[in-house]
Image 1 (cartoon, one colour):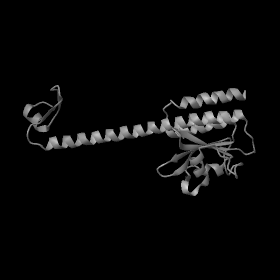
Image 2 (tube, helix red, strand yellow; image 1 turned 90 degrees about the horizontal axis):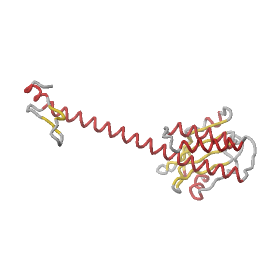
Image 3 (spheres, helix red, strand yellow; image 1 turned 45 degrees about the vertical axis):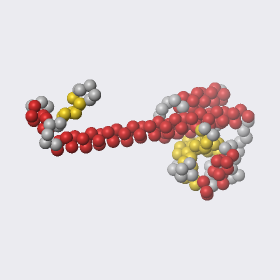
Image 4 (tube, one colour; image 1 turned 90 degrees about the vertical axis):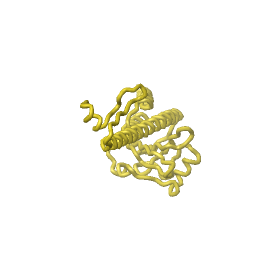
Length: 212
């Protein structure tokens, strides 16, 4: 039964790779499904900003409300202040923090890698001590790889949407400037496309021709 649940989680996480949802929704869903599949009491997802050299705690799933973990949301860890983050960037391998376990610190930090570069981490919390079998580690590796791809795709989609929004605003502003210029010209002005079709006219042309 547990194996079936794991396979379902892998399938759902894999589906998020091409789902195209917004980044925060993607992160929340990933944290929940990974927690349910791998049997952790808490799963956090942090994203790494290489330009700012900091790790930001973005999403959290817990099996029960935990104020200690809830307070971590939005918290950032700076590279120069964190030996663990420095180790993750250097080795790109999972880490078991020496103080890990319980609810204060994750018992396992799994790097999220895309193109060989660190883009974030899975922070895995367990209220009790636990060991990991080869199957457990294999499952976590698959989920981490899928998570990294889903996160990167969601990031790209968000960046593309921002560029489209910005470009649309630029075009609208340019159109308004052109219309203001045409309205201020006393001579008749007709703007056509390459085929000769009329695109726009100014007020002077409309007044002289009677067309609107």
